[in-house]
Image 1 (spheres, rainbow, N blue to C red):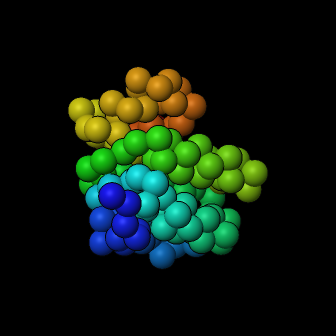
Image 2 (cartoon, helix red, strand yellow; image 1 turned 90 degrees about the horizontal axis):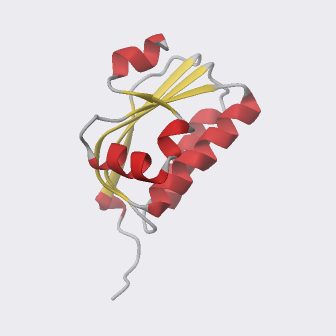
Length: 121
């Protein structure tokens, strides 16, 4: 049974107010019912044209094909703006598993922790 989107299944929190570095943390599920909320937040943050944009997916508990679309769309938008997009994913988490199985891990700047994402190394 398909219901209406439940925004409580995902939360997006801005962690940096610095206009040069934008950091958001996503917790919960990224699926077809929540992807529009997540991509909307990403596009809102990219609209200020930060030099670096960090997407922390450490708290993501479900990540399907909609999550792949979110990341690939976010990466494409960041590239058009000249923004470096770094994605924080735990090595043994669900997001890393999906990215590795699909080969999308080779298309993104993946980082294991927020510190390395902010440093760019």
